[in-house]
Image (cartoon, rainbow, N blue to C red; front, side):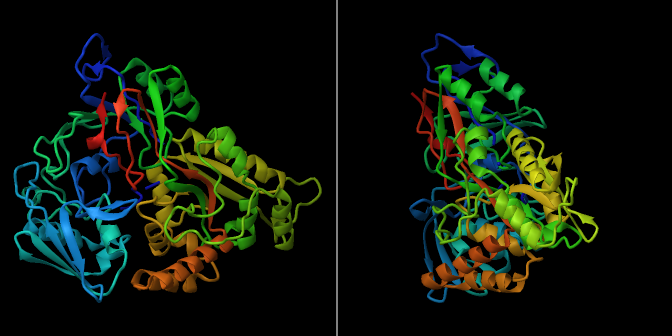
Length: 532
């Protein structure tokens, strides 16, 4: 799930009356609306669930996993029940018997085996997900019983099987030459909606799966309409050209908080926010030895020049609380006693002075051994809030002699920089409640994710060893202790500099009922929503 997939905001809004296509409202109709048209900052792209270019929200309504991660724990989805062997190496899943793919193909143990083996034959693509390195075999026991054998105990196995991708299921009829790694010839999942139409960079249409094993959705049609973020999306919502928006899988802002409030104040709309789902942060490249960011003191100084409370109140209007740790306390294993480090320019100056960064008379930028204390901060150009935050941080840093050059780029470019290590500082976010702490922490060791962020610290070997140990630990107390050590190391090294705790925000008409959230920040349970 390369990021991707995770980081950050598109918000949904729904008209109170029927839409005609993507056009205006149909007045005087007594019939309950049956369609949601939502604005998306980007196209749904390739809907192959075994690769990572597609839209998470779109794939989330088409495909399903064996189990679902909920606030109460793991619950049945395509598997009705399961057992885990005493040594933690064998998972036996008992599948539902009433499930069919969208093309009519039966969902059974053979289909599970074909899908999982197809994922495993593309191992390099899935290196970020450690389960992919643990699976030894997937065995059919009978028509509706399948067994997953691991090389060693791996406690996050159910968690990683519940992700939006890659361990979800597409009809074997859609495989190309028995594979999915080189593309598929259709997108037949088992989920509540079917993809029925797609015009690239314009829109995609999903229609209700009337034969869905969980019951046909009441919202009969979902349309994802591609629109530029900002004023264009806001006006489209006002005109009724789109009628639903929500946080996208990159954390960018389709409209800002002020625009959302205007829509709600107009009287027809409601704003619904989830509990904290992720942490918005700056990732600092500790491995870039030719940059000041390599130094712990410099990273800690940057931590202290970020005025999180002001960002929370002025930029997010209090909707995203200030964050002082990598994970919020509601993330499992993350309620760890860590030293609170907040906005403190004096402490930042002291750290830099002690590290030998000198601000000479009449100079604006500190120097050390002839080098300037200058770094580049990358932000997502589709996010108005990231740009505003970057400018605020730049201004505060300048006051104590740190020069930050700002660079706005597309989210795909930023993800590439993170993977290659071509950055000093960049905005990012944790993977979210459904994935953490395990997935973000596992990404500390991944070439495609945060390896460059972490590998330059003095305790890198110790950090990686503890990460290896925690995923194999079957004892709960051992896991808690290891996670506490891991979080303490990266906190003290300031390689992940938290800013705010983000949530999923929905703006919808007052008539839309049963609006809810999943544990994942990347999907919504559309199939449960309905109009009054």
